Length: 130
Image (cartoon, rainbow, N blue to C red; front, side, top):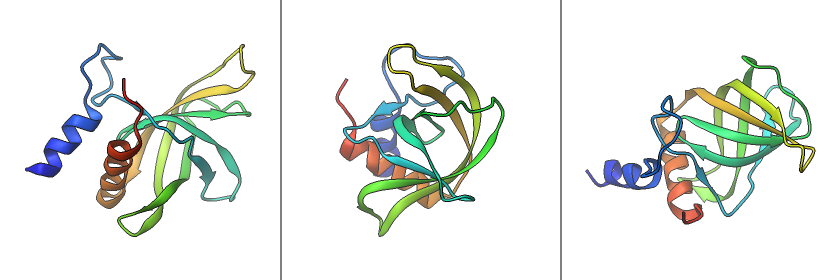
């Protein structure tokens, strides 16, 4: 169907990537703000994402295997929502010596089908061409 085709085009890549990833992460023209749903604190900004994970840029080091409940602000309403909500596990965290920020790899562990559709629409509309 057409939704499956859009998902394939926007999320699956043609380049070699980490073999553990099913879908290629895509960089967006926006750096979306990410908030901890439990505390309301800003966690960081999205560097890239897919329906299964994202790379977060943050000022704070995150502990590997930490579970996070996240809310990602959208640049505009998508499917009548202004945020994507998900839970994710920290897979790795490394400091970028050039920027002094931390880059964090997060694997999405819980997300609704509706939020997956919003992620796919977001990537389709706002991804950087590569």
